[in-house]
Picture (spheres, helix red, strand yellow):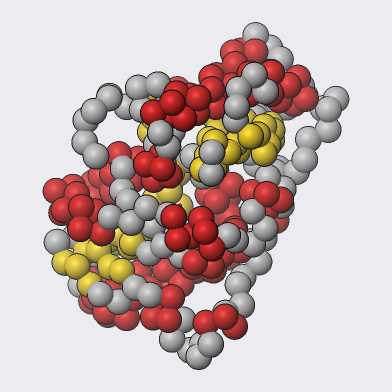
Length: 301
Ligand code: PAF
């Protein structure tokens, strides 16, 4: 596996790959890799001739510098894991290297997240999805991938990134199922910041999503009722709920209480101690089976 120290070096290498006719599959990450990331890398390796991963903790998407500083970083073990997974090239970089044209990095102007940035994360983490769109724009232009792989857990991010890809004309954005631990907790780099009792409590997030799914299967289609079912569970815990909402995953407008949904995405954000967790579940059956992909306990990082 090639490990390149800058976006510039990565861009040159990717250009060579493309001119040799090799297709590039790309997995952007902020490192501290877990089995969720590895499922993306595995898929990128199997569906493309070249698998490229970036590791960059992007300050533009952190509205809180404490959160940015606390974000787990494990470069050495990430590199070992990626090599074992069959990744072809991994690159890292600094903010200055991603924006070489900007002298004062405080002056970087972020792109607007677009229509899918409204509500939910857009409300509770103002500027976060703008920062994501901005760095992903740079990353896509650096790598020039045919396919890019993202986890469904960050559902709103997948909408914003797909919108960007539609705007610039590439890549195909492939949204992959959430990987969960044996309790159902969605894998996230932030889980490393939770104590064991906190992890147990965080399990209620998935329970709430499953409860919404359960009443969906009995024919309930009213977004308010589906959301109340989730809140009933979450409000009985010590979790600080930011949102527990049901949205039409395609229209992405706020739902009205009376309008029954044909397709529905349940989305939750909650804080436990100082750690913020998000999770999601598609309620209409076409997608639910692949989302409920509970990983085997203790296999891999
Ligand atoms: O999901 C993440 O890890 C980040 O938001 C991403 C997509 C790598 C952009 O920094």
